[in-house]
Structure formats: C-alpha cells, structure tokens
Image (cartoon, rainbow, N blue to C red; front, side, top):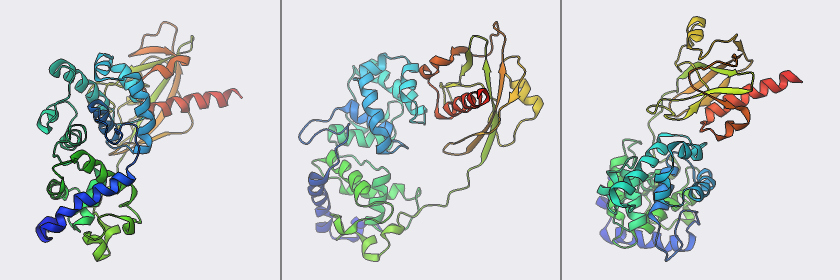
Length: 363
C-alpha cells in the first residue's frame, strides 16, 4: 500500500518542506546545476540528464565540462557533424544516446527556434527523451509540477513506503507516489533533493537513516528493512558472445577502420573490422570470409574482453599486412591519428591489445 493512502494527509504534507529544508543545507554542487536563486539553463539540464542515463555522476562531471566547452549551446551542438559529437562522447558508452542527442538538438533548433519545450508532452516528442527525462527537464529547468524518478528516487520512495513489489514491476507505483509528493512550488528543487538524498543518505548499502529528513515517516526504517529495499527481480546470467577483429596495417603504417551501421549496438561508431558477435565462435572458413582485405593472417596471443549491458564479449585478434594499394571495406587511418576517430571503448581495447603485442614483439 502506498504511503499516501495509509498515512494521514498532514504527515504527507510535511514531507516536501522537510526535504527542501534539508536540500537547502546539503545540496550538491554539480557542473550542470544552477546556483541557488539562479535560473537553470535548459540546455545544461537536458545534456546532464542524457549523460547521466546509465552513468554515474562521478564519471559524467569531467565529460560534461569538456562537452559544453566544445558545444556551449544547443545551436552549436546542432551545427556540429555527428562524428564530432560521437568523438566527444567517447568513453560514456550507450552511444545511441549521443546520436539521439544530436538529432534532438537539430529538432530543437529547426522546429522550436532553439528553445526547449517547457512541458513534459512537448519534451517527450523530441528524439531520445522518455518519461523520466521529460519529467526531470520539465521540473528542473521550468519548475513544472512533474515527477522525476531516477534510480535514486526509486530507492528512496521504495523505502519510504516499504514497497515489497520488486523492480522493475514497482516503477508505476513508485512514480504514482512521487507525483503525490511533488510540491506546487520548487518542483525542480524537490526533484534534485530526492536525487541528492538517495546519493548521500539513502544509499544502497548502510543508509544513514539517522541523518534523513524523512526518517520519521519512513516505513522501511520502522520495520528495520531499509537496506533490503528496493526488492529486485533476479537477473538472468549474461551470455558470452565471441568474434574476431582484424588488425590490418599497410606498409605506410595506416590501419584499416570502418563505420558500424547507424542502427544497432554502437551505431555509427568507428571500429576495427570484425566478424559478427555471436554466442558460438565462427569456423575458420567463416572468419576468413569476413576478412576485410587479403592478407596472411596471424592470431595475436590473448583475448580482448568487454562487457555490454546484456552480454559479455570475447574477441580474438588477427593481424595482417595489406599491400600498399589495398582498398578494403572501410578507410585507412595513420596510427598517429587514431585518437581523432570515434572509437568506442571495446575498440580502444582492440587497438591497445594489438599495439601492445607489437611493442612486446620488438623487444
């Protein structure tokens, strides 16, 4: 049963003021967060929310600063080439976010004159903006009475109401509870306060309940089960996929790269050519047929390993030297200019592995 249905209205009415008073004293200073009394910049709010999807605050901070230095406005981002955006996004992962970010910037400029819609409905019509992100932007950037329910908020509310329903099934109930708690004024501060509460006090392990402004109303604390919540559905084991990457070099020292398809995993990113990634390793004939150019292939010792959200990946690396006139399926890049390419982390591992083996062989 939700807290609003069970608790007296008077207690419910005190929750937002108590949390906001705590927030005024303990709010985090973050690169994208407006200072007290300042009006938030919708561009920075939107950018931070997209970056923070599936990524921690600690990781995003440095990326955010570099990104806004390179693309200081939504107009600058819209005017940039997609490759520039993907390159700036390197290391943040989940590259569909970067493609949607670019598409969204262009839609805001072309369809809205460079101004962000200020309602959840208007925001959700834009590329890459779902229910949570729309609520967060509407609340934080425009102080709309909207619910912003991220992972921190899910944990806080599940404990506040002692919800036994496991995630993700509990999401609709949690969102409904948040909607009843958002105040008419300072909705944006309330959204950020819940996030800060989850990050600093209502942590996944060893929550600091004695410091929590909601300790008196928290059912999980009263029941002694705060650290057990939220419940989570048991995750299935991740499968392991395998493939072969082809590290091919011309006599002039250039390396063959290619662009991945725009749709799908790592869409639009640059890669070292490889076979398909699947659970069974391909036969020797299949691997040779997938080779991007003719070469005498030699397998490098070791395996490149990387973990994505839904699977583990193991890549064997074959190396070969192509002729000076070799075309190949892709494009050739001098070794000293590889850093200019939008290589995802897994491909940086392939490059590092190949160069590392080459260095060791020269000793």
